Image (cartoon, rainbow, N blue to C red):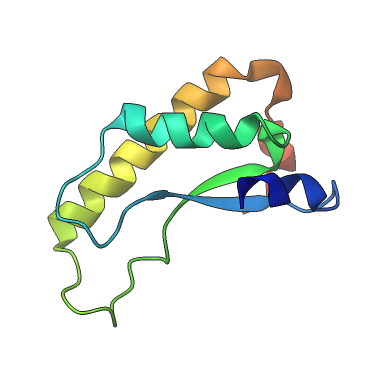
Length: 99
C-alpha cells in the first residue's frame, strides 16, 4: 500500500519501481515521472530513488533486449531529471546522494 511509505522511519530511503520491466511496451517519461511524483506526495522527494521494478528479472522468462533495457533506463533517467527540477528545494544535494 502506498500509504505504508509514511510509516518508514525518516532516515530510510526508498527505491521506487517506476519501470515495467516485463511488458514489451516502453513507458513514457511522463508515466514514470507521474509515479515518482505520487511517491513524493507521501514522503520527501530526497528519500526517493527511481528504479526498475524487480531489476530486469532475467529469470522471469524472456529478458528484454539490450536496446529495450537501455531505452527504459534512459527514460527513467529523464524522469528523475524532471523530478529533481520539479522538486528542487526538496532534492538531496548530489554530494549527499548514496551511490
